[in-house]
Length: 69
Image 1 (tube, rainbow, N blue to C red):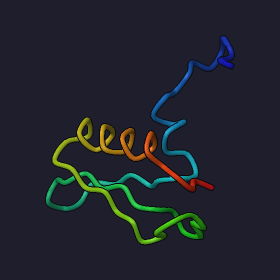
Image 2: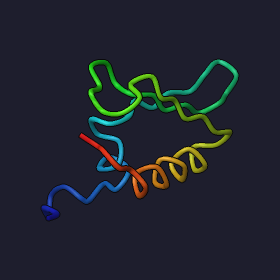
Image 3: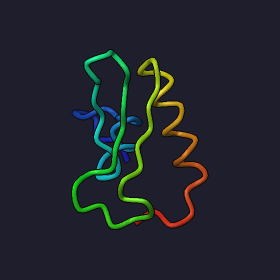
């Protein structure tokens, strides 16, 4: 449910508690699991050339997740 004073944030919903987003020194976008991640593959990383491509990959992974905590 969306509160009127706080708009819905679909990217925040996608990554909160599941991914940490960063940009490498070479300008690649990267997502990695947060410290203490107890789900599958705690060392999982996803990289992309653009922010949009990274978010697209994360959406794909989210739709096909089997055992998300």
